[in-house]
Length: 486
Image 1: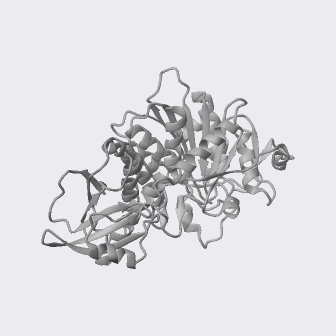
Image 2: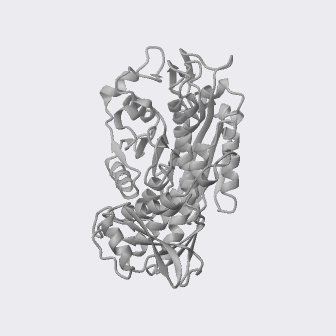
Image 3: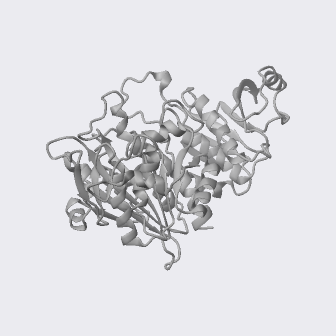
């Protein structure tokens, strides 16, 4: 969706919209519209939309009012975002191709106004490239928004938010594409294309390089696939030369059959989004590079396909990780932690990070625990946990901190190796996090985000339709903005 700022919008646009605070008087509107809004019980509450028609300079205009809630509410930017998203949800397939959005009487700050526009754009993302028989009245038509009356500073604020939208949309595309389109090598190629000209540095390791480094855990997951496994690192150096980097690590299982521990067929098609952690890291890095963040950040993605064939690892196999620790693989469907442990160790050896955050669609147990409302957070550092929690509350990518502890850690001790890749049925998300913690060097602040319930939605949300949500991109960007850039 294209956003244009103008003092005088084109006269032939029929759809005009305004953002309204809860309880605000509807000044300057045709009396019939005011009475109609009252009759429809439009009060300006968050996400509420009212539509009416009025004659403006001799032409009939379609007038929309979107509620932004109370001006002093603690979630003001998110409420403004939902107002913008509500407009897109109503008019995306309405037949209207353009909208005039008047922000002059909304009492918005520049950041609030930019949030409205972010909601407008994010809610308009669709992935219809494979839909050849989509009915005409289901096809998106709204492509352009002309913004008038924006507060001073809105254009600069929107430039930043537009970079974030670009990152979210990239993540949604990666997560939505099927596994015959996005696999380790094509994931790398998509990133190389998306990051062209941004100034990032890209490192790609193939199986030969990872074999020499001793990444037996990551490589073991991909043994059963014809697709070569990859390790991808994207480096953005926008901070001081002597600042240690912040590192984000993403699980990128581009399709997960479960391997020899084969998943049940119903629902297996959803496992194309088992690379949602890597997708979030890639999108966050694109957002940071696009807005020229004043920070040194590196995104590391372990990319594999988990398939069953004659070369696939078996339950009971023992693999040696890059760190030298050995792992008894009891369940080949607990593969994400095997990918991440080598990626985590490599990232620490290579970059000596100031802090490290990993994101992964790691466990179904996390969905049982938190549903689709929060990502689970595990951390060895209270300050880092608080910073991530704050970033989640600001962006709507919410997190809920979960426990770690020695009693949980004992549950993954193996009688024949250093560690086993699954514990008992209880506390499954926690033992998965404990597994990863064994590969974090002492003194390195680390957080693990289990986002299994958040990267894909079965119903529309406030800024996404059914499908890929782009969860994690805004969380990481905000964390960098608040903590690293300061």
